[in-house]
Image 1 (tube, rainbow, N blue to C red):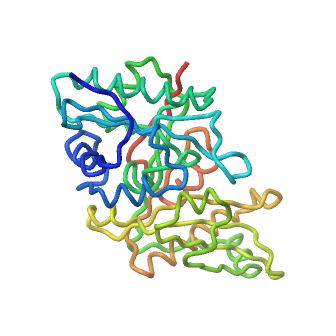
Image 2 (image 1 turned 90 degrees about the vertical axis):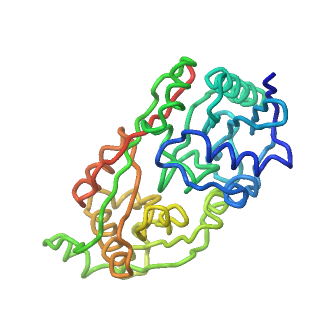
Amino acid sequence: MIEIRCFRNADPPRLADVWRAADLGPAAMQPMTAALLEASVFSKPYFDREGLIVAADDDRVVGFAHAAFGPAKDRTTVDTQVGTTLLVAVVPHPLQEQIGDELLRGCEAYLRRRGARTILGGGSAELRSFYLGLYGGSDLPGILDSSTAMRQLFERAGYETADRIAVLRRKLQGFRAPVNRLQLAIRRNTVLRAIDEPTRRTWWEAATTTGIALRRYELLNQSDERLGSASFWDMQPLAGTWGVPAAGLLDVEIEGPRRRQGLAHYLVAEALHDLSQEGVALVETHASAANTPALSLFTKLGFETVEHGTIFKKP
């Protein structure tokens, strides 16, 4: 008989076993260990054992699903009005589909109890509360197309597509920052500063990126005023399984009045050049299908789309 229950303290090694056995697709960190789950999941200050739903067949854990929330607008706490089921992992089992369905229903019930008015499927740059670097690459991309069983689970439960996320990569071998009149003008009037392990700007950023090696590039004018920034992280240990040094581009921010002036293009290009000089061979980033400026920027810089993910929404 299958038992659906919440997380227990003795579960981490069993959940790692489930992760290794489940078909999560090629963008899932392997081999999974209890220590990696501890760093990315259980150690987070907002981890709630009630949101991690476990399926057990007698004494054997055969699946789990994890429901969570994103940040409030001021990024000082979580906002329980919008919740998501980040992932559902089930080992090969005669009742595999039924187990997945029950786990998803358990997550939905938990989210509703906590006050969620909007229920999603999959994580994103906004909802990266857990599993950064363990599933999806440089950020959380919803449910990847290559995670067939998970994608079919949400479709079977009646979820609809709320957004599509493009996974983009750029090889850096021989990379040269583009040079034109605008780029030269920006270079003459700005300073690019690289900061390793920068002070996290908000509680949410600290909670989600503590434990990873973060580098922030800041673009400053001659008055030392910040014009924009781009944040990258060293994608270990995931990149180690790819066999190349890789960095993940988490965000690019340009101060509102200075957008559409070529600053983002210059900032990211110079950052890519700097990373290539330090031996980084590959950079990955994600962009929403609705974020046309970001997709245009990355295309101009030579990024190629290698995968797509879906943010699902419960009607």
